[in-house]
Length: 86
Image (cartoon, rainbow, N blue to C red):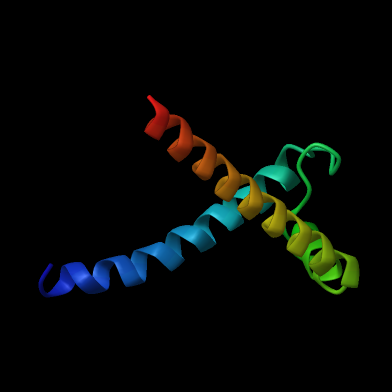
C-alpha cells in the first residue's frame, strides 16, 4: 500500500464504527425496541464498565483461559499420539 491507501483505513475504520453505533442508537429510539431485545449502546457500555469493576469477572476469565488452554493442550497431545499410532 502506498500513499493515501494507508491513511484511508485509519480514517474510515473509526468513522464506520461511530456510524454503526449511531445507527444502532437511532434504530433503537425510532423503532422503540424493548431494551430486553436490543439495549441502547450507552446501556451496553455502562454494563461493561460495571462488569469490569467486579472482582469475580477476572476470576472467571482466568478460569476460562485455563480450561480452554488445558483442553487445547490435552486435545493436541491426544491427536499427536493417535496420529503417531496410525
